[in-house]
Length: 209
Image 1 (cartoon, rainbow, N blue to C red):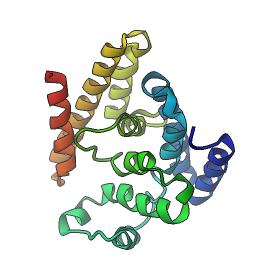
Image 2: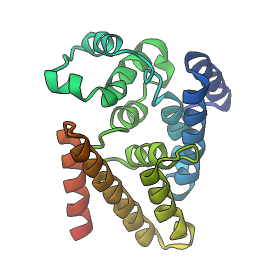
Image 3: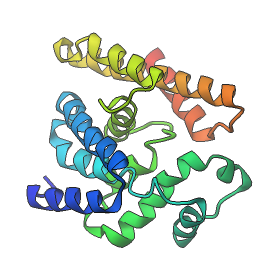
Image 4: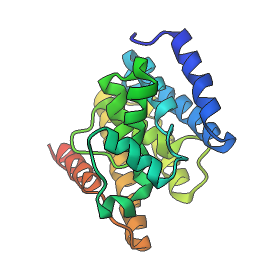
């Protein structure tokens, strides 16, 4: 265990002070869902998952200029396409804020889980997959796709599956989530992250092996 219960409790309180009530309710529910999923897929990484869940939306309520400033401090720049995909910018700016303000939790597993919780990427780690999914299906989510995906995952009773079946179920759930996201983005006329396309293709390859 890399992070103590005391440090995680302090992080919980710190994060709560940084967010609106609405955003914190979601964040707290993502933490709960990450633990629930972690008990199925990564019981040895629950502290990593809790930290990443608490920090995943730490900059969600920032404006685009604040995102840009943080991202540029991390020696990246925003393209015109990035600015059109502003809903994903908080994942990148959060990584930089964690390094600066929450350096105790700037563990590579935490940073990567936060960084890819909106777009995914090819060959996602188990922590990345769990935080991505927990953010999508936490119990505060009421959007139709979120409810459908939550029911799809839990109604199959993954706790009763073999390890191999459980892994395949996680991959199929993520594939469905990417399909939902792509359908929504196309309907909106919004840009599609190359990372999301890569994530979807990577899962398809994994399922075909």
